[in-house]
Length: 322
Image (tube, rainbow, N blue to C red; front, top):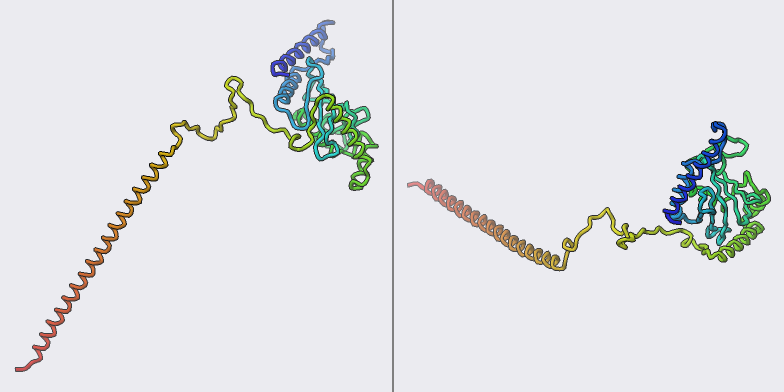
């Protein structure tokens, strides 16, 4: 279903709801005490947005579609058995019904495919905390935070269902026999095979039904885990996510060429020659200074020697008697 058709369905449902509300309150002159079961506009908007999001960005493990294109409040859900679990290869279909005040009240889920599970009733109804109304019921053993709240959505619900398949809640089972059988299999560390044999048979039967419908069931984690897809601009044919905004785009003129690298090498060679000439001049200056210092020292030594001779001569003259 396209985005446009989804919006049309939402609009038609909202119009039907408005018409139903008018007809319910239009007779008798007073409709304030008349209860209606028409959907609220907020519920229509919420479901339309969620359905559109799940069609554009599917979630691993399940797919959804409308049972009737004109009714946003009843969905058909297909849950794929997670790989490396007892439910691997399974294709379990269910109906998901939403109340007219969604998301303030939780939806309900009923499996159409036979599922032997501690938290699934014989008629297929699913029993899970996240779908229980937010009331304080100490007898249920559930905390209020584990129950439904308006921040939940279809994604969180179905991901919780997939998790529940592999990790049942046996404290308040919907199917007591399945719960006892599961505990026996778990406590025996896999030695008791009655429970897994039933699950595998159901998964194989569900897989056969998927093949008849042309559905490819993911059998490996690589196929099960959806890979993100990039949206392509249909007008230009380009991927808008191709470029990374974190980097500045360079034009062809800005990109370095081989000539630039050659020029850099020549500049480096010229710099090396200049450094050698400067080094030689500096060495020559140092040598010159050393030579000058050495010549000054020799001159000073000669002068000192001359002074010494003169003093000796004076001393020798002074010592003679006539």
